Image (cartoon, rainbow, N blue to C red; front, side, top):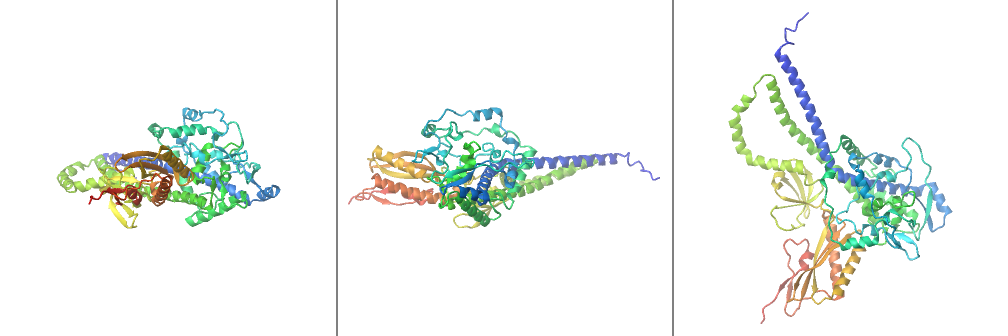
Length: 617
């Protein structure tokens, strides 16, 4: 037999085994740590967007299920048995479809609230509302009709997104049947009048009547402020289960039918628009002969088996589809909402994919540093001395550090800006200005983010569509304004009134302005500020500042600026009709329209003209 020659008992063999065990263990720990760290970072960054999309997708899926009922034989039979002015409408307790089941399986452990939070959330004022309180309105025939637009009155200024998964429980949308294959019986059909569609049941304690109109009016009279973010609510680190659920939900977004089979294919934007039109036409079967859809039709999915509207689900529906002042939806408005949701889905998927590529590059760079140090340690275990070689090269390394120091510092600044802070995602509209710039920058100087990596960012200049590439280090110390993350644009106008305008005229102007905002709920949210800023007794002009909150963010700048111009035109027309618009004396004062630096649009420049008094002859 061949002997080992004493190799198995030698020191070099023992050191080789120890180095292999050490290298394998450290590599496994490194891979596990990086996978958890990057997975948790991606989860925490994109989880709020995904939760809002999941809520809206489930809402659209149930609306599509509601529309699909109109092509069933049961619907045709029920329609034939009823009067022409009454149509069948199912309650929310429908059997879950395949699309509902897959989204119902997604649940994050971080959504679990403590009993104290749940108790405080349910401890609302449950006093019985008086007649006319809540969200019922008299339709003129002595019946109560749900007023959907009133649900947004008194809401938070910045709450333009749908409630999170903790607020809208997706299990409430599904049937109570178990998932073990048991099929529940068909839901009962109910009829609603085409004239008084959506007449809500007059119950004693409906969920949506907890906040009376009196409390809403009182809240509107108080100062506006936002609830501060409690970091303890986000202190719980996401578990591996949350990360896996997050990845599972992202895979559902790549499906050819992300909005359920009932909605139709939505793999491309054209398919989504076509499917949206089909669903809307099916929903019109509930109101034969009408070209607009009463919001009570799709609002029925917020009603439970007892006929009680779920407040959070109703709010999510209103925020997604935005009914007009008559609580109706046109085909264009319905398709716009579905197209907006499709856009959010595609941009989220692209942003997560780009973030994954950045994480791979970051992992690759980390691996280089890791394996260099690992090789040095392994050489030390094998009784080699790599440190003397490093010490001998120290002089060269120090000289090299002085040579590339400034460039390396800028490189690392840009590297950590993207890797750690993530100030923007793909498709975001941003504005880059100096950090020392005082005041608000010109919103017209903005860029779209086309591509992002750890070293450079590719931007598209919005006014001219030109593409530029910049180093991340060059903007690391700049002020980066992200319009996509700036919820609900604030539109500011400067209006010039005559100083002799009476208090009654000013009150009539504000009342008409608030009515204009309420009549356009898909465009405007609320009047935030209308105050007098300055009075010049010499020229007899009173300067008022008007601030109105838009439903969209500055990401949709074109729409915001168009609506801003329409609002300015309405204000000037109204001021002229009331006889309070300032008109400079043409005999002594000439008005020169000049563009102020930093003005958001030309309207701001024209709203405050510069006054020039010519010399007397």
